[in-house]
Image (cartoon, rainbow, N blue to C red; front, side):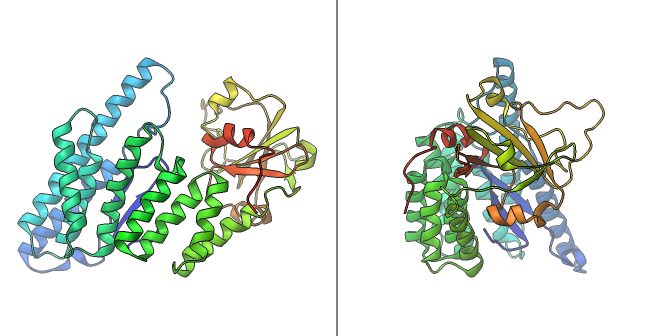
Length: 374
């Protein structure tokens, strides 16, 4: 999704909102002492926002492996929520003290978004106040439509999350689609609305993703959004197509998918230069391996050196390969890869059966042989 460069909101797979406030070039060069004081206050709010956004917590839809880990994750989420509450308070103080400042409206939006991120399951009073703040921003026609959409999207995602607890909003394509349809009815053909449909198309399971991509292509969406949707359709066109491509093992041996394939073949692509210990998120598959399944791990880019003392990520036994050309590789173009990590599942005839994210692997394997869309 495309947002103004000075303030962006990113919707991640976990369903939460990452807030980032960026400094406007030359912003602190005003000679007025009052303006400089206000600018400094905004930078402080921005710093709080960046700190809150960088808080690392496990995605809510992943189950902690043991009670101790669950307790630690609960504390992490509470600490993250408190950081966002501080951001909301700081943003509110900023626009109250500086109502005519060029950043005042951005501060109001930041307050609404950060307040929603500050909600915890046990503080009902805060949740009611936060949603009221966000709803007031959403319905105020004096706020820019794109800003109101960001806040509305965050509010709507919370409603979806309550219906599918522990799962990300895009995991239920019907609910995700209905949510975006409501937003489309409310905001019309905003580029951000079609960006929401694209996010759903890219992250939901591949069959439904194809439907949303087709809808985007036939819509009034901006050109770049349509281009991304066409790439998704091109990828879906490969389903049930026999595919073979050259591979090079980490030991330097030339190979190919046909040589490494089995009855079922799972090809996991990841950024090995950034994560040299291997793709993460495959622990459950290592503990409960699928029968008659071959695993191929493909580093997109040169595999980095494993830091001293670091351990390899837990994953099912398989063959590790390297694509040194990285994103310039013809394979990336052929498979229309747009994000990492990503997985492709092939049947016994080396026909592509499906693709998606690592948490979708069981469903992708189960879906081998299903009827596909025309």
